[in-house]
Amino acid sequence: MSLLIIAALLYLGLALGFILVVDNLVGLVFRDPRAPVQRPSFDIGRPFAASQKLYRK
Image 1 (cartoon, rainbow, N blue to C red):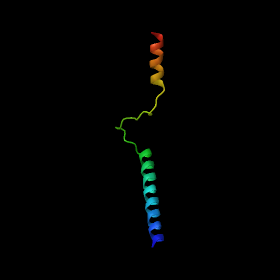
Image 2: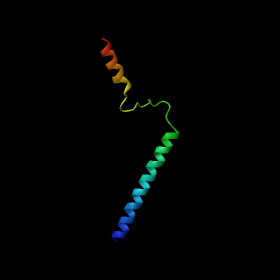
Image 3: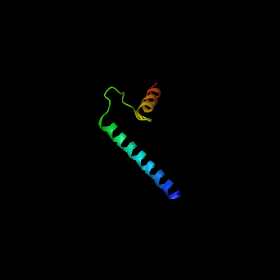
Image 4: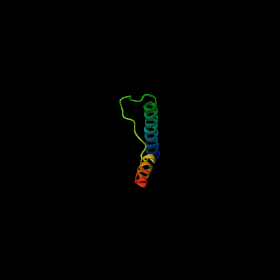
């Protein structure tokens, strides 16, 4: 009985993983042109430009 439960949980995990992979691949191919472009979480250009501005003053 426990083997059946383990097999069912593994099957559900693999199915959910497969769905997530396919969803991400579809999202890469069919992007929404109206969606705003997401910037990277850390952009080195902004702090660097601000520090240069402060240094010049």
